[in-house]
Image (cartoon, rainbow, N blue to C red; front, side, top):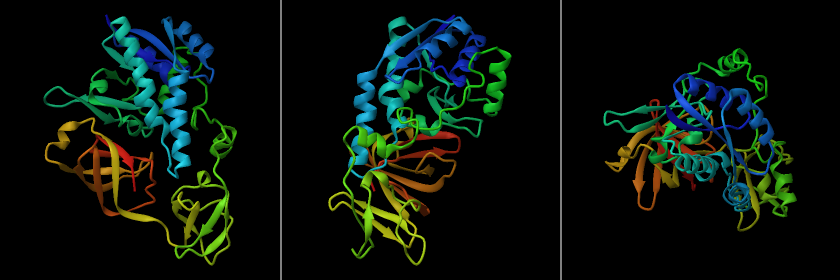
Length: 340
């Protein structure tokens, strides 16, 4: 029987994944990653109900450094962070691989909605899920060496309703547990208050127009992102958009024109299908945020894990710090963090 380590969070997706893996002939070992947010008792309850062993990996310090610290720093430098993309590579899948190595398990799994395929040479390919809930975007920062070990049992599921039905049929105790919708360490979604509690909130400053005219006072750069149009509190002859954040002068630039870009640069580029780099450039569909919307683009690779992304048509509000992901049909080519 093949050993596999499953990230068991105590939620319905990972619980159903455990059931499916056992049906597929795997010997399942659960891993709960403790990052100081609670939840281990619920994960243990699921593990007991499914009769699988559960190991608790204490990653509080790593999570604080690699995810919370990163999140804080990005906002303090007027960028828009993507903590899940960072956590998956630097914390979650690292912990899964480490534990799998310790117990001699060749495979790892999570409850993400994504799939693993194989190319003609037998190499792992990250693929979009069948479900509209596709989460391949969040996994595009993983290297192929990790993807070679991955199994995503929910990749073929039609939707979340099917997964919940499987949970009920198996009498899994968290079948009706609600989905987590926000950043896990900020469950109320109030990023500004979280930063203030850490003593990391930024000072108020001026709203200005594109010519530098002062329009009012903002509440701190961490409260805004490029393209934002709600909660500005500035009267104008039309709808205003956040056009630019200027940390060097502590200004938020507002404009009556929406924000569209024809070209962006990305750094810390990860190609989970590295063969696309062989010609130095490739065409793709690109997503500049976690959404279903993608845009036709041409990616030109540069030195030091950088790339220039040129879109066929301008895209709305690509924010510095967000993750741009490249697709070839259902294949995830990889992605990089938007510089500007």
